[in-house]
Length: 103
Image 1 (spheres, helix red, strand yellow):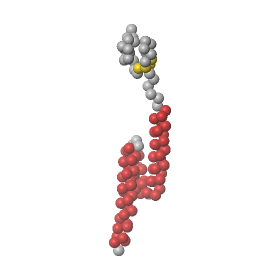
Image 2 (image 1 turned 135 degrees about the horizontal axis):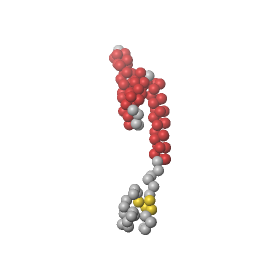
Image 3 (image 1 turned 120 degrees about the vertical axis):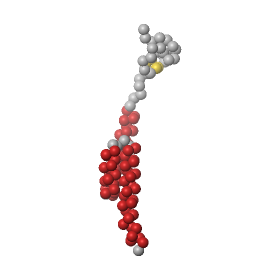
Image 4 (image 1 turned 45 degrees about the vertical axis):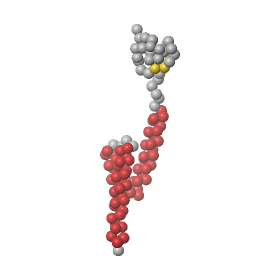
């Protein structure tokens, strides 16, 4: 008798909790607020369909983010003519030997 009463309340509650997690997780992965809300609403309304879709899209976004971070090259170092040490930017004097770099 008690299960008969609580079972219909359990599924919407589980869907709501998972939808809230999807929304916050989508924000963490860089989705816009509206896209996160769409994912959360889809998960709430059709959990069995949209949760696997979200997890696949999340994995794809995670892989693309990791590839983008790998391809970003660090800023190239300029070599000092006098001490042959590398430095970043365009300083007036070498940060290593103190030699004037610009006239």
